[in-house]
Image (cartoon, each protein chain N blue to C red):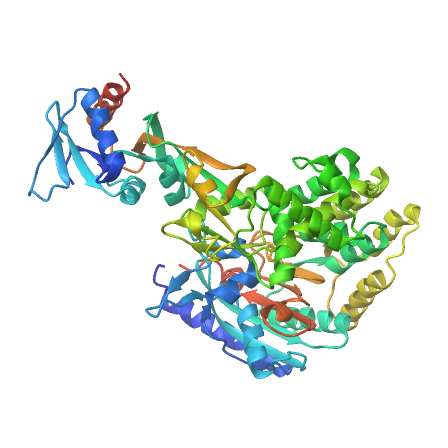
Length: 392
Length: 232
């Protein structure tokens, strides 16, 4: 990394101080999570896509470690070290470096070493209130720092989950579609598969075996699979057990007997994920979309509306904000409200701040049960560029 | 740097022999030169060429950085080591040896996993049952990552394996592997099978040139001559 000009170092430090002052005024506790993190747990949580961009190394004891690629997971670990159950109300703020390998070379908008200033709020009872509070504080901190003009982009994964719940289909299909949500191509392929009786049929396995497998008789199914493996001379090798393999075959067998999704349902899901609208029209457009299908998104749509109301009361102007159902965050751990703040100078590929709700992350990191959590961080080098232009 | 054309060749193993045979068939004889360390050589018929004997992994590095003009090594290593391989390297000629497929292999007993899309599905249930991601043992971290991403497979973790990768599933060190295979016999002996759409790369040794090396018109001419002699 090129040496930074002294004035940029000073400007970044002063800016970080202003941001942190805003966070602490709002009652967030300042923390400094470890920069060096255990690679295993960290990477199990964030997945291989981010791992490809994480600096992983081995210490002299053979321990696999990494430089933190963001501060959210380290903050979760710190919280769980204090409160192993995680379900204690806490609000944290931090400012410090994060590290990401940039394929194709680091640039000033995408540096390999950058400083994040952010907040995380855990175990709040009122989710929409807390979503709005986090976004409001980030907007305030950016204003304090001197940012005047920005575009707000909003999304809500809770609406997507509610839509899938409202449509009639097996639970495992919902799980699959949710799982593929982040990858449009895989999502479309899966949706097409669930719509076609032919595609739902299993290939490459004896028809006899599949026809004999009855989801209502798991014990008997296991016996049949065991007999088949013995006949074929296949030995159990590795971690996965006979019940695990049987379970997946039972799901295959169930899929083959299931009624496919109707083309109308598939089209509805497709149209929902493609929905882009001004935030103020989003709820109405979603209602119009589902009305012919006589579906009820119930609480999710009400929550979406309520969050916008709370934001308006807090003085966040979202009249110009955009909503996108497929609003793409590169991190998969978000579960509900998501947002990005884009500066016209840098464009949508380099948001100045981003964040959202991640209700399952604390459990992934080690909490015994899911804990509500929402957070956001500011990319401080980008903010500095927006405020003062490119450093000399 | 010298103004000679640097040709990087494998310094050991079968690949070294096969390269020597290839050169010999083209009527080119490599003799040791220099300080006697045995890692440099000359070609009597092509005095403008300096041969560097280095490990296969190092050949990729030399070509990437441009410290070698030409090299012979496996396509698998080139694509693994050099992220934007097609921009930095020009493939001149496949050599007809060193054939190996880089494949995704799983225990043959996984009759519920036949294609890459099954793998992603399985990964989800694996994580539910075992409270961790399935592990993929490989020395081809980058090839594996890219291929898994192309196929929408995400719920995994790579564990680096530097030898006897095919034994990792049975030793419970990983659930599946990405490795090279020629006949598939080693995989079968370890109770593994290749997924139907699990061939990542059909690799063999290639004569390649570096786009980053310092090229002059003379060196280009010389490189063409080497390529033509080896093709004849």
